[in-house]
Image (tube, rainbow, N blue to C red):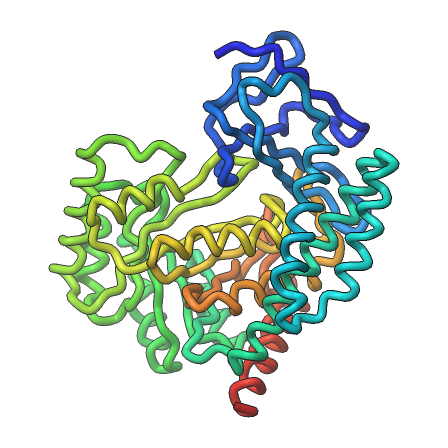
Length: 411
């Protein structure tokens, strides 16, 4: 449907191509962003919009607002975003303050955001409301963990692309590392010795094949690798689910056959389906995973990828709550904010961000594993410095794991 919807900015929008359409649940829709040269083609009602506004104290990451319909005549990006995070923070305070969660600082910041909103200073209102929502989500997570007396049997993992990188991880990183995610290649003979070394260190192994061969069909490479490493790999990511479209019933039949064949090859494996949740890439795995569950595709866990620039910590909290409703344990793979940022995206205080993201993940009982890149890339920092020694990100992870263990010992 063509519409005369007018989309305006209060000064925080500088690249309209970065605007994304979203569902009311926060799934990025695979639609082109609106153009100033023609009327906007709107998604089905109700819908949302997402845009990475640069904010003081936050950086530049995607923010989203919902509740729009085809009858919406105009919207101001920053105003709509601010109103969503204002409402979210207010709801969080009402829900948890009476339960003893320390939210006084969050409440004060919310009041400041509301004062800016009253004056229609939308960029300031947005900066304060986003920070308040993030601090609120992290405070709730920390309090929940303290009351849970920490998490037991949690998997702290790193992703390695090569056998050499896996050896470096084993040499450089100690506890809490207890999971190595390997991207196996049937053409390499180096993995056998590495896997034996990992097993000797009593570290669990997760594995997948390169994305080019991860499809809803049990490829010969995957079949060969599962047979070769039968009884050695505990967690197999069998397929990468792309886009928002779940596809045909035949696709689900192929996925079911993949999962059944994997169990035939190695009865003891935990079968994972991988998906990305990304505004930037306009992808959401949730619709596909939801239909997989409804149609009885036999898999045990979700391998969910989320990148630091695809939302706020509050949005991560809400995202995990939603994926948790699928009733499957989640292995969460987080990209880390590089100090120099990525593309147009930046994140203030990356280490504080990592602490908050880990606390939120740990506070969700259905999140059973956290995985991070070992080696940095353009879009993500890694856990090692240039000299292959643990960097500040790993030290932050280690400190949180120690704190979590302390909670268990005090129980």
